[in-house]
Image (cartoon, rainbow, N blue to C red; front, side):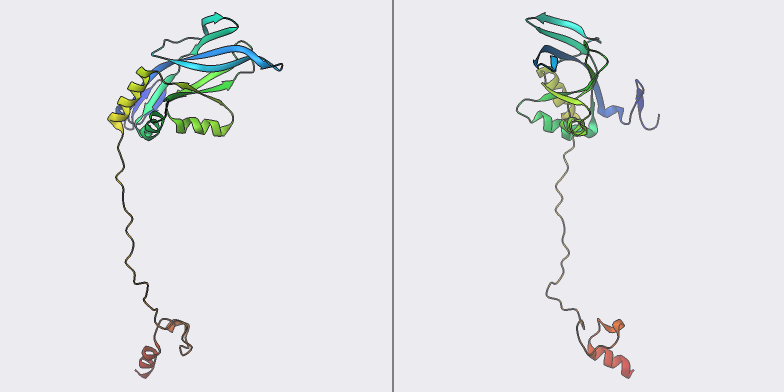
Amino acid sequence: MVLGDLWEGHLIHNPHMYQSMPLGVVIRRRPGLTRWAMWSWQAVAVLPHAAQADWVVLSDKHDCTEYHASSPLLELHGADTEAYLHGLAAHEPSIYVILRQNLDSETRPLDVLLVTASPYEAQDYTDSGEELVEKVPMPPVLTGWVKAFVSLHHEHEAFKKRRRDKADIGLKEDGIGDSRIAQMADVYRAPTLVKKARLN
């Protein structure tokens, strides 16, 4: 393929600048804080290299249940290294879990759309207002993996100083505003030049 390789139906334009890892998403259920919501649901952790799962119960105690909801792929792209660097520079590097409400199920009220290490991509979903964006700590093994990818593929842009035109700001435009110039075509010609043209 000319542009790239197909991977599970997705076109990777540069397969040499792409890596992925299945990431288990842990969602915690607690009693709701209001009378309108029986339960409160929140993504609280991610599990690197996790197998596929479908809301598997990990722990259930003291009105708090944790589920391994699913294991979407965390994808890293070479074009997004600037965003990954921004995320790694935070006090606590994070993974962003993008969720969508599932109104058809009371026991599985959230669908996991994707996981991302890019705070820029997460901000796009936050701005849309249609999805929920949860920020969870990035495990050390995952931090090292993302750092290695950035180190391999990031290219710093060299600072380019703008060059200004060296124009003489004191230069006077010949003939502008001179009442002795009769024609618009002669507006930039000095009266002496106009007179010479008439005499020739």
